[in-house]
Image (cartoon, rainbow, N blue to C red; front, top):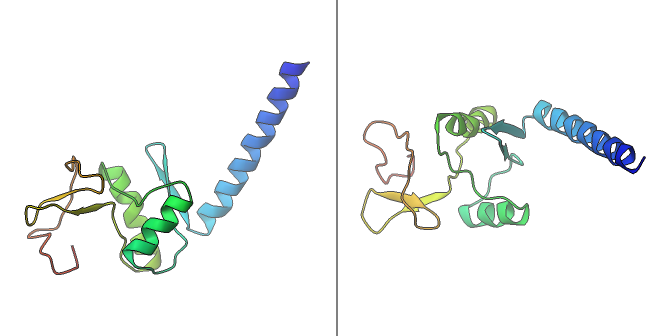
Length: 121
């Protein structure tokens, strides 16, 4: 009986999570790719504020590591008609970027002649 009770609780939690995800998808504030959930509050903020809010929520600034994750980020850019910060920074070598922790990027999808350093990479 204990196993059945635990199974029932798990089933109820799965249903609640599924319902919440559905609502958030309808509001266009979450999307998923490759087992990761990408989320936004739709508000504009500077990089430091964005980084802090992501950490407080238990996440990190989105960093595309493949085309699917890039599309997930692009979904928000298009939905909110705005830009998105990415979890990367310029390295000590000009025009070379790295993850915020200093490791080398494994995926990029820059436009031709980007990044140019003009703020619209």
